[in-house]
Amino acid sequence: MGLPPGIDLADKRRQLLAIIRRRSLLRHRDFTLTSGRSSNFFFDMKRTVFDPQAAPLLAELLFDRIKGETVDCIGGLETGAIPIVALVCARSWPEKPLKGFFVRKEQKGHGTDQRVEGLLDAGARAVVFEDVTTTGGSAMQAVGAVRAQGGTIVKVVSVVDRLEGAAANFREAVIAFDWLYTSRDFD
Image 1: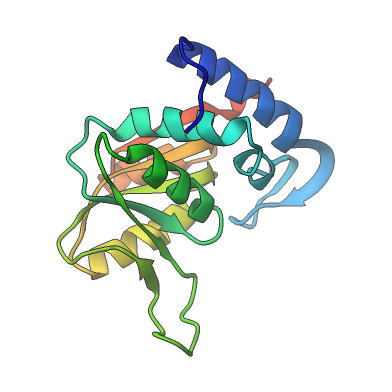
Image 2: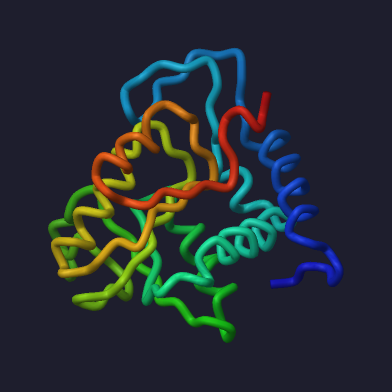
């Protein structure tokens, strides 16, 4: 995925943090989060995921978080997880090929009319990705869809955890949770 040789994971992590801070961290306005909560800061992660320097860094760092897991596929809830899953799927080849999928918030009502799109086989072991977690509600929608298809959740991985309850909610649901950064990393 086009990373210069000789850059270690710690350097990649610092570089990605700087890009997220510059491109995606919005401050000093009132934002309504998916959870319904209000905040004076917001992570618009699409601005990072579609950055040509950030995309391979993100793919490498997220793949590193899961490559040691026994996992068949990766996915998440539309739309935030879609580009992340595509990047990590591409990075996984050929070292540890992972199939990808995404979960629609609701069925389309046309075409195949499936809630889960992509490659999620019945009984698969899956990692769910999230761009930003607050309470974990969005990721739990994806977890529910995987389980409805007979799949097992290995863990949920977020790019940024806002530290507003997601970890506790996943712990209560007995789901492993990992992240690249927390909101404290951006103070």
